[in-house]
Amino acid sequence: MKRLPSKGLPKGQLFEEMQEARAHDANWKDGRTFSLVYYAGEELSNVAKEAYNLFFHENGLNPMAFKSLQKFETEVLSMASSLFYGDEKVVGSLTSGGSESILMAVKAYRDWARKHRPHIKEPEMIVPTTVHAAFEKAAHYFGVKAIHAPVDNQFQVDVEEVKALINDNTILLVGSAPNYPQGIVDPIEQLGEIAEAHRIPLHVDACLGGFILPFIERLGGHIAPFDFRVPGVTSISADVHKYGYAAKGVSAILYRDEEYRRCQYFAYGDWPGGLFASPTATGTRPGGAIASAWAVMKYLGEEGYSELASKTMQATNKFLDGLATIPELQILGNPRASIFTIASNEVNIFALADTLEQRGWHIDRQQLPTCLHFMITPAHLHVADAFILDLKESVQFALDNPNLAQEGTAAMYGMIGQMPDKSKIHDFIIQTLDSTMRLR
Ligand SMILES: *Cc1c(COP(=O)(O)O)cnc(C)c1O
Image (cartoon, rainbow, N blue to C red):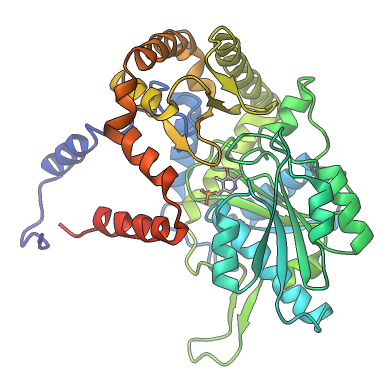
């Protein structure tokens, strides 16, 4: 066990140790990762960092004390709302990330239903099977049952199934723009019609797409309306720390009407510490993250975001064009943004992932169905050709070495995929978390 050093370390030694510690981290800066980091070059990164540092100590907990943060937060929210064609009635909050935005939305709708649909004792929300796991977390935290609607062969939620699942306990419908697993946008307009017809709120999870879909659309890409233009949509979550390029720790949750946001708030008037009010789940909120969101949005403007979206789609198309020349691999569905998955009937996809990792690519594996996940950013433009070359060679290598499927992580994923008892998988994940987080 480590103890707090009795004497502090000199700064030089400290930073050396930190640089050493990151030696084996995923190499995102050279475009070797396809998740977790959204990087669009040093210039933009420095704007985000400098803004963060300028408000490093400020606390968004009390907007009265920091008028600056109040200004940044409300302006970020209204800029985001305008991207989604919100009118002057739209309101929202900044949260620490997509998960918190989603948690807050589910909490708000649960409490909205308690007030307006008091007969509902066991609230349910209908979510696509492809919805982000944060909704399962919200279900778990807030006692709302997640009812899963299947997706069709294009990985869009089956709206007829959604309709059939609606009952007296339904408090919320959810669609993704796009979903995380396959990068496909659900048919939000059709979900909106169902939501309106049944007078049930509809949340659109645009955590991933919120800051890129509007710009792909401006560039002439075909994106069906997924935002407040769709009358049934009552709220949207959009992460500024993803394709918004802000520092980590900032996402927007927007509601069509303040009646919903009120159900998100928490207030307590009997606390010896004073009158307590908190808009979101966290108490202290890092001023840096809020300032960074504001600075990056103002720095880029519509033009800057459009240019980045254009670069991102150029990179994506290079990957997709390259993939089209590899007959053993398929892209699932018809992704219109910069997220896609690769599957195969001929190559063991996990063995392929292991082979690519040996070549220095950090690959994300998925299940149900088995596939590999790719999220493209401007940082991938200059590695697209190298990746496709490695991919071609890795496919051949995996075909020539079928034993790879019984080795390495491929064997582990294969085993998990075969487990008939899903509760065993749950236990396995928890044990893995435990051992990763062991103190040392
Ligand atoms: C990333 C993501 C989330 C969760 O966001 P975090 O910032 O990781 O908490 C939710 N939905 C989708 C579609 C996402 O891609």
